[in-house]
Amino acid sequence: MILLCGIPSEGPIARAVAAAKQVDIPHLVLNQRQVGEWTLELELDGDLTGLLRGPDGTWDLDRFSGVYVRLAEPRSLPEVGDPPDAGKLARAQALFQALLAWLEVAPCRVANRLGPSASNMSKPYQAQRILACGLRTPPTTITNDPAEVRRFVAEHDQVIYKSISSTRSIVRRLTPSRARDLERVRHLPTQFQALIPGADVRVHVVGESIHATEISSAATDYRYAARDAQDVQMSPSVLPTEIEERCLALSRALELPVCGVDLRRTPDDQWFCFEVNPSPAYSFYEELGGQPISEALVEYLRGESGSTNGDLEDDDGASD
Image (cartoon, rainbow, N blue to C red; front, side, top):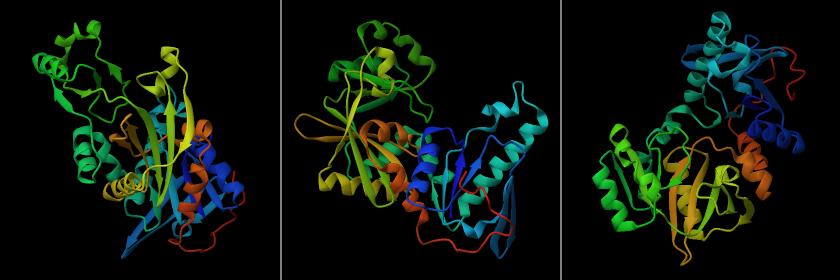
């Protein structure tokens, strides 16, 4: 049995549930919005054991061969309230912390553990890991000095800027009008990169499988194309063997068995890597590009690790 943790209506969880049903993989959905209806009991006595209790039964943790994690911050759950109800928030946070603690050491497959996912907290650190795996990164400067930015622009002409942390930011071009505001950089170090021409390719690594999707859009950041009144089209793509192997090596090096690698292929067939997403919203790419990512995900989680011990109590509704 596999465990899917998060909000069932959210795209990646919803598609994982549908894929598990399609290929007949037993699964349990831990609905994080059911505040107070789930508890996790852990016991460390040589080996880590425990029980997961939900509204429809109780499951031994050894039952799960794999876990997919898409947990929201407890304070963001509507059921906690705004302002938050102290009791509901405490229960939501207790479950959240217990799950993350268990998943750091759980012997089953986990996509993905919190520790390795932290590599995305620092884009400069992650860039070093990308380079170590043989993938190129764009010329980059990270600075809060407007003069350094101007020097970089003079060298590379077309430049984009974005956050250096895991906080999502919209990638924008440094246009002449935006360049007039460069004094603001003094208040926050920002990442500037040379604009690399070419086609975006999102690679989803799932275990040892590769799912490459080519994106066609006139937007600087295709994720927000609609804000710029631009369209986005996606289609399955085949990577050169060398690039495929480097993406797999990067996934292994970062200990992220499921990840999204952002690449760009230039017109002269050079490949650059921008970053690695440890919790990719793959449903967006699956919907538009037709790649079977969710099926690969649940097949990976089924794996061979984890026992087949039965539930302690009735597990009706495990596939809800």
